[in-house]
Amino acid sequence: MAETESVPQPAASTVEINDMVFCSHFKEVCSDCSFDGREDNDAVLGFDFIDRDGIELPVTTLNKDGQYQCKKHGSPSCSQCYGFKKQINKLRLAAKKAGKK
Image 1 (cartoon, rainbow, N blue to C red):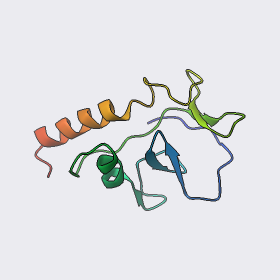
Image 2: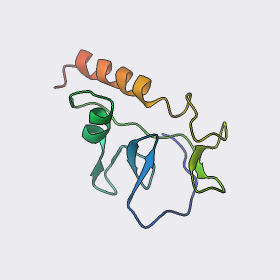
Image 3: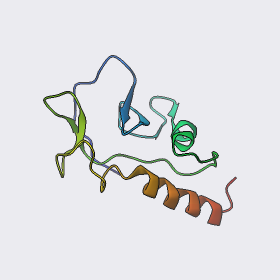
Image 4: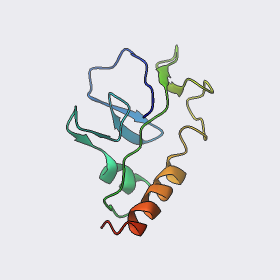
């Protein structure tokens, strides 16, 4: 499970990072928030929705400009940590292999 830091959150219950939507706990699927952003995030990438595992972001902080960035690399556009298309592709393939629809 990914670690998250306690970061001051905006009033909204969701955060947007690189056009993808996550709950304030930095999860794509969160039972605490009753949040599921997988369908929206798949649509942003041009995919039809399938039942796949959700993404959990790595440790994420706010920079002085109010942008979310990965703590490891200090970048709001970090392709390693925020390479969502690649991550979602892997999760979609795993779901298809597992027989989810």
